[in-house]
Image (cartoon, rainbow over all chains, first blue to last red; front, top):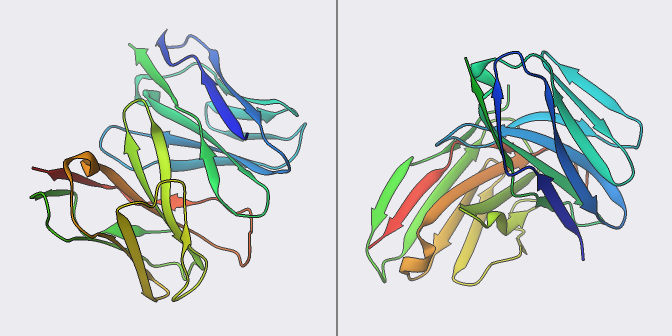
Length: 110
Length: 115
């Protein structure tokens, strides 16, 4: 069964304290892995797509990487405005459907 | 930028009512999706559509139906609302024909309460 697991569920950081969020997946025929950011009361906002192992994408303080079994979202020197829930989703097979993880809620304290 | 607009941010309805949730996207995307998001359960796919007048069941279609009469508009219908359908409903769209692997872009959601 296709599955996506994110860890940790919650993460508290001090401003400037770098860390990584993990997204482990078991799917047959990965077509893409997607990272989203979701603020309270809002819909998920698209961040990155990764298509193949070894690929990396960067945007400001965020960097996403992909292996054959997992993806990491690295946050370098985070700021309070980076506080949000980060969602990972994979697209597999021929349906175009996304399978979402439960998310990691990040809190960055000043 | 892609814009996905959901007609209501908050909605309160009564048990047994027929409820319509509307979603419009302005990027000429072929694919549209409806999800619900609940604490501890994450996002779950209700229905999706790859083309006008076309629909596919997602993982939890029971109690819902959809309509896509125009490419830009995708409606979710709760045939007879029940309290267990109280949730945050999210609409999304993506480009690409067939199964594609382009990102989905989401609206800001409708928080629906069924009393």
